[in-house]
Length: 217
Image 1 (cartoon, rainbow, N blue to C red):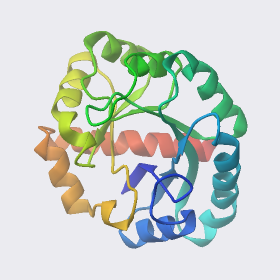
Image 2: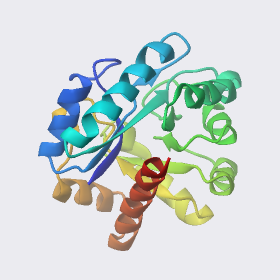
Image 3: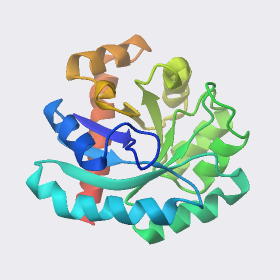
């Protein structure tokens, strides 16, 4: 089990980073990315702290901990600059808060994030054909979200991924321990949006591919 999209109380989560990692390990996860919400005002405060924890705690918690970010409500015109800045600071996984139908995200965020070469476009909402084609070309992963609010368009995201050959990952967008779904519920939620068993296992492999890339750095 892997979760590549989580939040601690360094942004809007309920637990500290170490506590969230421990909760994930108890729930059966072997790898977790800590991807707190950041923008220009908070990136330099959060990224170094997540890097320090990942470097010091991974071996002792029997867990691969990936320090990352979720760029959130960053103006679309600035996303290229902010993605580059996050990587230079050492964020090993960069997500962008996509155009979920649940929040008033700026139109154009999905396309700008894809063009910036993010790793994962989180909960991309009603992503278009053009955006999906570019995601496939850029190697950007689209997220199927087990979070009820952001998962409202999972079926559409899955359809677009199939249509255009975009790789999918399944994330909890966990803000607390109750969001860390155990394997059976994780599987059922994925099938509930129309995913086949084979597609579910491929999505799990895609997550492991990202973890493996991090471990090779």
